[in-house]
Image (tube, rainbow, N blue to C red; front, side, top):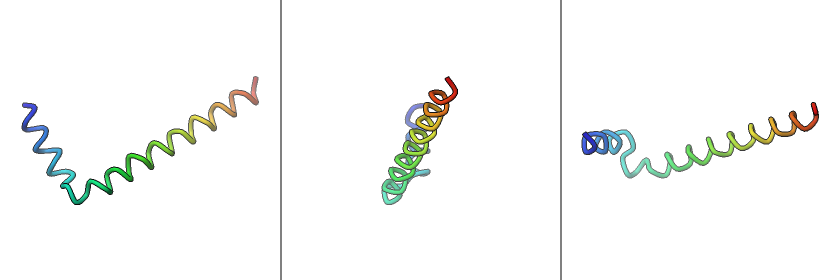
Length: 47
């Protein structure tokens, strides 16, 4: 079961696309942090 999943993941992200995947992960992380900061600021202002 685990091996099949690993093969599937490799087909989804071949090694040459690994950089793109990394950039996407970092981008999503930045967006998430920005959203959290915005929520924190909003929460501070409303209180």
